[in-house]
Image 1 (cartoon, one colour):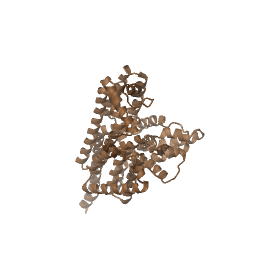
Image 2: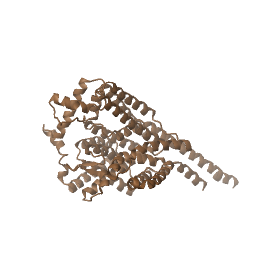
Image 3: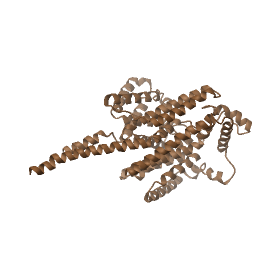
Image 4: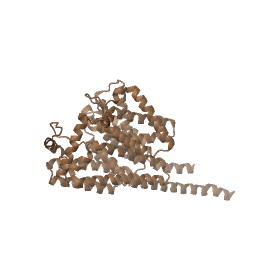
Length: 499
């Protein structure tokens, strides 16, 4: 009995599993959806107290809720669909208060990502410096302030990495949320009409019918799905029980289905990058299973949706076979050329963060490019950074990405060296998903930065997080070993000597 109590004590130190935490997070979000607006203020206050108590006891619930809010674009959709107050304004202060209370009450020191802080501080400082020469300094100042908010949210997510399942909580929260969104899209394809408020979380464009998810843009939602697909596939391939195989297989299929519904050509190319990286990390048996499963999936989807669902995606083949381009591609090429011309004119510091749109019309007219009557974005994160912050800004940005890549590689190698093959696979899937995301951003500007920068700072700190986690696991095992030895000395050895 004493040995069992010792084991329970060690296990009791561990926090709840990520799936349970995601369940709590989803439950709290559903409660918020039900509560709605001002008539239920007292009930909302009571529920907020209950949720706050749960989060204080199990802090990763709060982390899960934050990821769910970001991926589902929760606050704007609640405001538009239910007239609810903004929950985004409360999320960050509440989580900061939570971390402070945990430190005061139980001595939980938050994880501090010093490397990420220095890198991001340098990038923010350079963006602020652009105010001194920007075409419209107010736009640059506003962009810098918005990016500072993104940095704060990212560092708060990092602060939860002191807990053993912090990394998995972020991963599973993201995968489960996007899977639920794709499920809502799937049942709409089947003909089920959702309430207007819920439909905002899985919307289809009313003109071209593309799946836009909760953010109202098919291409941006596609790269978010690209990030999550390798993570779901890794969980599926590592499942050791039948119900896990079914659940994670269904999740991967829904995510792939959702990506096809977006009809995003850039998303498909980005997925090829992500899956290509993940494929080389699989065993021979897993590679065969992945190929067979992917073939079955494509056959099933083509039968279910019909060939017309792939019509826009087939233009990728036509673009490579002919010199003709459609209007969408023509608009992107025009944005690329304008970005390059702005860079040539302002090579070192660019024109200031957020000022590309201001220059687009004039440069496009002077160059005889496609003109839409309005300022347009660069449609490429890298060209946007180059045009708005010049070579110096691009160097800082790429330096952060290189450090992030090294962090993922270091974490993967360390986990493999420690014999943690399952964890190593999850890290590889995370890196593959982020690589696909960054490949997709070659065709998209930085319109939804919060999700992206959370994943970047997690990658920057990945090796240190893994080292701290596995070191704490070893300490727990040594502590358990001492408890077992003490028990054996007092029971087994003592009994022999008396016998």
